[in-house]
Amino acid sequence: VADYIDGIERKYDFIKYVNTNNRVADIFVNKLIQEFKNDETFEYTAVGRFPDNMPIDYVDMSILMSNLTDNVAEAFNKVSGRKQFDLEISHYKNHVFIDMRNSAAQSDANLVSDKKQPGHGLGIGKIRETVEKYDGSCEWIYKDGCMNVRIEMISEA
Image 1 (spheres, rainbow, N blue to C red):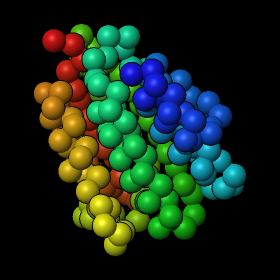
Image 2 (cartoon, helix red, strand yellow):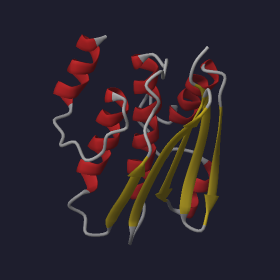
Image 3 (cartoon, rainbow, N blue to C red):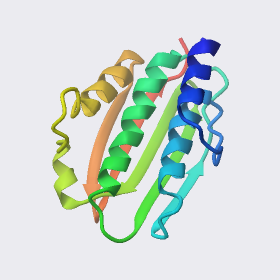
Image 4 (cartoon, rainbow, N blue to C red):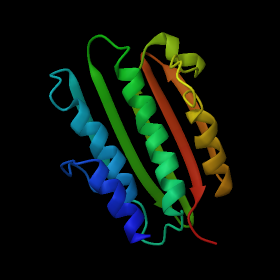
């Protein structure tokens, strides 16, 4: 497990801007922030942390967070003007909530990727599949130039 995470960290040389209490989630969130930090229109907030007892497999967390942050980056590349990214992680009893909001073009409201390379455009399905594996649910809401992804998962058996 540690070798898997160390390998990802070596692949993405990043500065740690936020701490989510999950090394894998940190890699992808911080990679996204670093990618856009020099854009003067980019702003972000990140609040909350995953619980210590978060039983999500490291590979599943990688699938979840890499696809979520890839979708944000793809949306930012279509947006002119302000690029806002907000992440809120919370938990109550045995439920974990991830609320991710980002600036997005109206064309993103239909949740279809415009990437044409093989293997691209499958992220939404991978997110759903991973969340459902942990007895969770997810929804995407587009409103007022922003995409909001809300995820709920069970954090312990």
